[in-house]
Image (tube, rainbow, N blue to C red; front, side, top):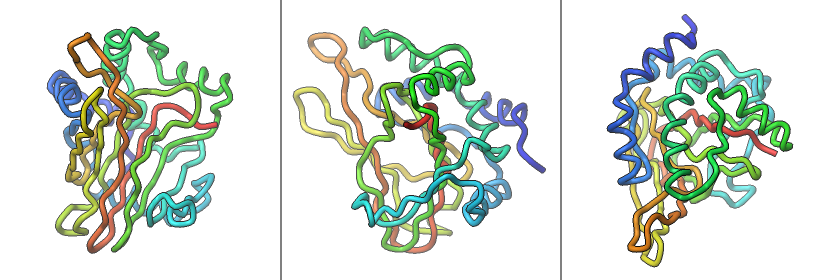
Length: 240
């Protein structure tokens, strides 16, 4: 059975978003509760073998981004991908607006995802940025940011489609934060199958002696040591 938007919203609502926001403030990333069942994870992962669903495939080694491969969906998103994106946006929006206020930046994001994407398209960011990623033994992803134009949503979500320690080893999610006037801080997270990890897209507010400052972050994936690691990446702005 296909995951509906209503069911995706019910699952998203079971996460303690207040606690998640506090963890984002502390670390720049935080896990959600379960968003997909194991059977749904398998079905979403299997979409990778249907090239007609994707607008492009990126070979990481070719671009010197790491080793492995990922694919960007077209705007005709499969039902579970569209449902999860729509269900998560309203929960992420208050955090985005709060962070903008702390950094004295304009809160660009309207109440609905549809309105926000219309603004992206009007600004020339009209290509889908939803990603299905596939890594095998020896694959990894260099530290980077998913920023594709002037309009950026400050949070995104990765959902694990395979089980760590059973389906693959290694492949931890990496987050490196350049703190103002300090050394960088690294965080490694193990993704739980069917759960999401919310993380910072570009930068986030951190308190300093002078008030709030923006700490720049990049994310990546450590080397997969065995098995196959597949994830769904939900980005809330579109690409140039």
